[in-house]
Length: 188
Length: 300
Image 1 (cartoon, rainbow over the protein chains, first blue to last red):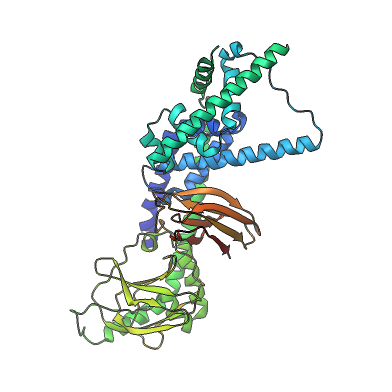
Image 2: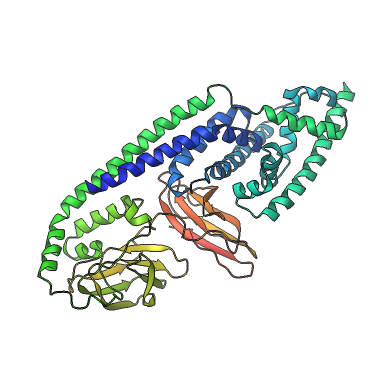
């Protein structure tokens, strides 16, 4: 019986820790999944999936590293989500299904938040995941470079170079989307 | 609208990214349910372990009796060199069924503190003879767990593939066996009773990797490399990169029979776990050579 007496407090500690982390980090996890490319309708399911992964791995996660772990898991889930989406789109193409038309809008109307958010998704989707992750943490979560380096477990210099590339690419893609939307507006 | 204003509008739109009402509560409810289930599973495993320990009591009593009969400690000042015997090896010669049960228990109980905290320590004890037989195709390192709970190379640190080491130790000295190349922990050897006929430790690869914190973290790389992972199992596995703080970072699933190229670096370790059970299947150490190379690793 000594084994169970030793193990029970540890088990309870781990359980409490999972609950505490889930409670404290849920919003961050939800935002991260959304901004890393999980469709809004799927984010809640993905967040629960990430928490289950957290629960399975809690013993191997160093205290204080939980947000980093959750963000890493969110990146993986987002990549899988994008892969599934790409597969579904390929299937739809093979079946000659009509492509989904982009909502028509012109740049002025993008002040409308919902359309702006859709445009943001389009721009972010064009960023490779490694750049997107840095951009999300630095420019959307407004973390310091040092904190981004900590969360992604990469050197600060790498964060700086990735962020520079991410911002350049973001600006380019934003300009392209703006032009595209303006073109749609002109056609109307 | 200028380009700058357009970019600002896009960034501002992200500020409204908030979880819908009730999402957190639903997540916590689901998590509570999952945690309850997991706790039950762990307790079941512990119960099995306790039953097996009770079943092994006969062996334990016999060992204690021998220890009581043993001669007074001859050299308390001396520190042990390689030795000892695991309970698995002892019973494997006498009671194969029980040995199998205890081997299973080793796996079940591996996440428990005794196996995972790396703090097995020696105390003073009686001299014993020890034999370690390396039946693996790779060299192994034998470490004595010192009085300070540190790993000290024993047997000059190396037992070649197929070689056998024989030496003296104490019946209170635990040992560890590691793969020489990857430094992966292969086996933890508990202190043993002084029985020269059965004191033989077999390292034959039947031991599952012992779970616990990664042994090495990633460091700044100097060269990119590729690992070609072959999942030879009938179940999906998960590839996990060990990051710069020794956290496991998932790099996705590998289906049964699938070959997956992992673009990595020469200073980055990896781990592979069974996706369904989370069992640690393989620790893959970095290959710190400064050249591009592709390594094929089969997960059996």
